[in-house]
Image 1 (tube, rainbow, N blue to C red):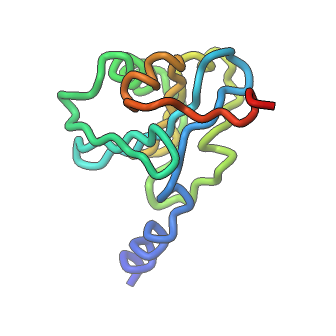
Image 2: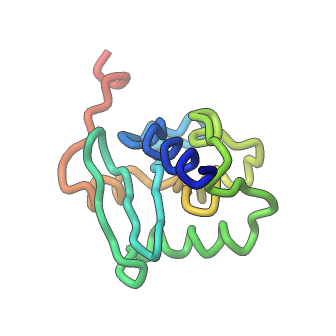
Length: 132
């Protein structure tokens, strides 16, 4: 029964359609959510746009950040704990601003340079804030 409740909670996850946002503190960086399950990565590179990678094919720019997060992560949530949008895009440790942070067993937020995000995305990022 508990397993079924947890399964339903994950189906209702607010991050099903996650997308990157401009980094609020680091110019020309984006906060990019990523989900890893069984060494299969979903990197949310745009609205309704995900890149899929096997663990060994994860781009180096993401891979070194992931290793740093795993080695230096003090506390993160387990997958059965609810994760808020605030946790996905906000972290109190500003030393991680240009790296990112591990949120749970499977969820990460990578801080990626805009040029790299454009490269893996394959199309321009529409930044409405810069247009006005």
